[in-house]
Image (cartoon, one colour):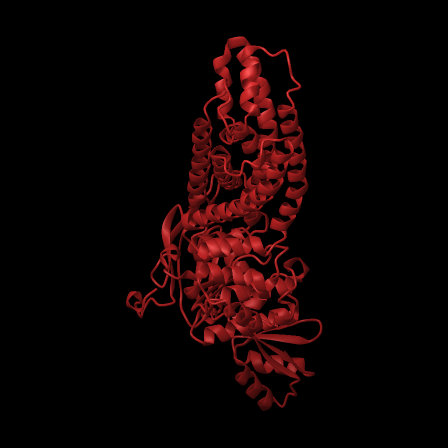
Amino acid sequence: MNLVRAELLKIRTTNTWWIFALISLPLWALTLLINWLQADALTSNAVTDLSSEQAAQFEAAASPDALSSNLFTTGQFFGLLIVMLLGIIVVTSEFFHQTVTTTFLTTPHRTAVMSAKLAAASVLALLFWLVTTAFNLIAGAAVLNAVGVGSQLGNDAAWRAIGLNLLAYLLWAVFGVGIGVLIRSQIGATVTGILLYLGGSIGAIVVISILAARWGDWINNLQLLVPSLASSLMVTGADIPGNPPRWAGAVVLIGYAVITGLVGTLLMRRRDIS
Amino acid sequence: MTDGQRSPTSDGQIVVSGLTKQYKNVRAVNNLSFTVAPGRVTGFLGPNGAGKTTTLRMLLNLVTPTAGTATISGHRYADLADPLRHVGAILEASSAHKGRTGINHLRVICAAAGLPKQRADEALALVGLTPAAKRKFKGYSLGMKQRLGIAAAMLGDPRVLILDEPANGLDPEGIRWMRGFLKNLAHEGRTVLVSSHLLSEMQLLADDVVIIAAGQLIRQGPVDQVLGSMAQGARVRVRTPQTEALTAALKAQSATVDTDEQGVMLVGGVDAPTIGRAALAAGVELHELTTERPDLERVFLELTAGKAGIR
């Protein structure tokens, strides 16, 4: 517990956390705008000439469950990126500022230190989720009212999405800590994390759709293996026909978080600090 | 650490035994053994690249030895229940987050070690940094960084102190302060192990020395003993306006005399009182009579000759 407190104190006593919070704010506003426009389009019934399969997808996406889930998890795309970067910095700043020596002198049990870092990153993710969700409940309910489906504050599917959104925040923070251990250079780890998150999803969508056109639709299920796609799948309010089930996205993400967390801890235990 | 675990003979003692570190292409430390006693300042000397830092890092569980052991008070560092209350270490000066204030740097360590927060203020006061407590680390001078490092090492009031090149970057006033500080700590019965390549400084500071080169032990013992073992006999520096008369008188005592262009005589084979008596008997006027002690630097260079350099 002392160690977690120390790790949180490390974060609190530098500028990083509030700079990241400040960056998150406009990004959240941007995604809110996009989600609003999307909800507006989905509920205005302006789209015609759909095949039966597309119509089914459209209907699922326009359901109150899906609309509210989407709006109440606004900011997820960039929020996850931010908590991942914070997770990375929790580890790499120790190497960047050479404080890792002091840290391991104070606590020679490196597994305990790494566990505390994972816990502190999770606490940070929880706080980011908490604030974002509070914003979302206010803004999201307003948008839902505006497009005429009601606030949906009592919708079970929406709350499930909010809960899963928390899981995603936690897992990406853990993921970030893992990346930070694997790539000790602050810049290297940050750039890799961002590329993996942004480039990874876009690149994977392109590659998978090309492969799917060639080898058949089952390949579409592979998008699940891309962490950022898995997490956005996980928080979809409703199962969209043609997409893999949501729980599978959760399983994949947990798998990644556990693997990076474990591998990171094991590496740190063996590493010479010089 | 509980009192039951402490054995009176090993308390505060550092024992390095057969310590070896093999990196890919170089054996940084090779079968190194030495002991460091409490209540004394021990200088850990060696040329650059001799393996001093690697040895200290193995002692502190930061680097895993290939072979051998290093213990403090009979325990490996990782097995000490409360490491900060037992051992204080300063390994590099610039080891704090640049955007964090000095006091917060210490508070983080206190939090992790379960020490009360006030220890941070006390330790800052101990090293005279209180006025800069709320300044960020990036605004600290090199000397202030070193002092902050010492404050961090003193947080747990440890009985063993391990310092890697603490005098690096200090101005003469800072070095003088550090010397007094460390001597005082040893005087209180603590173990003080200081690595350095500043030999003149070590001669003023250390009671014992451990000299290594190329990862191997060259010599260990009290400074005087190590100097004595190497001294080709102490020489006495003598100045007199009557050089020839004194030379003749001394030669009669079977002393060796070298005289340089300025007329300064270096006399070997006899001690200063003997020279004084000889001068008095011969009615020779003396202007200087100084025993020249062999210095650590010369001894060090002789001992490590051919073993330093790039490996």
